[in-house]
Image (cartoon, one colour):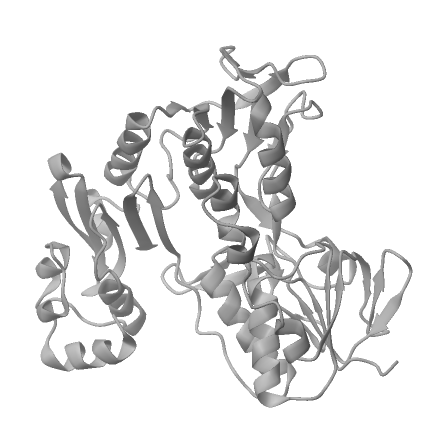
Length: 426
């Protein structure tokens, strides 16, 4: 068989971005895609919706069924790469097969973080990052009346919502003092918690699970403070960490994630990385860190693919963006959001607008007259306007107070910005 020009490890957003970018430049060269999951590419954020019976498998597909054939991709699905031989320029599969490459993309994504908890081997304990996780959990649900979700981040709360909608009594256990502490401030977290409490979801903050009790099956959990919660299901949803083992063993530089430059290149010639497995450059914090967000992963994949195919492209950097709805209540968080009014001593300015009776909250964080971050809860219409202001580093001193009013519209912007943002689709 002819050696493929390109080999891609992974089958999610970054991999698809790379394939589509390569095919813009190179229509014919061989591309081999390898994934340890046996499935067609699918949208991982939708697995909680699948659990809640809101979407079908067909609706989860990230690209149409004929995507691989149309792009002349040889797929090796359900097969695991066990080793990257960087000097030999080949990857080794679990079955012993070796596949050579000219250019390699590592897009292995993240894996669930599992703390050392006693009793993890009991029936009724699950993680939740893949379609298989969703299927296994869904199959187990008829046995469940009470569930504990460990983790109050985005995945944990979407899981809690899905379970509550199935009339399961849910308790969310979160080590921080509030939910969504990494992306929301105290006021926005409070509004989200109220929405969940109204839907019968309980919260325990400032605690974690130290033991899962029961014989073979889960019967409950014991918290750090010794309190017990009875349940038949425990889902660990603390977060994900980059899957870097293959890269580390191949001599590729790794910190928290794979270290790449602006071209998505690693320190090893002809090996690239993209997506949740990497450390992306944060436009606001001006540092490299893992930012596991699907649009960023896709764009990194595109940049990697173009460079692999010989066309120079650079990744502009990532902006932490989260847009989510809980029980119909919308929340958006972009950029730097945790600062308070007291942060003005550090050169930041914080503007807020609160209408708690209407469950509406807006927050703007500024520095040097540029928006550094914002939160919008309850009414998120036209939030793309502020996102574009951040990306374009627009000076907003003349209209900044209007940005926290609602309804928010393009009319608040100067004419030249209105015309520009109309083209961008804000």
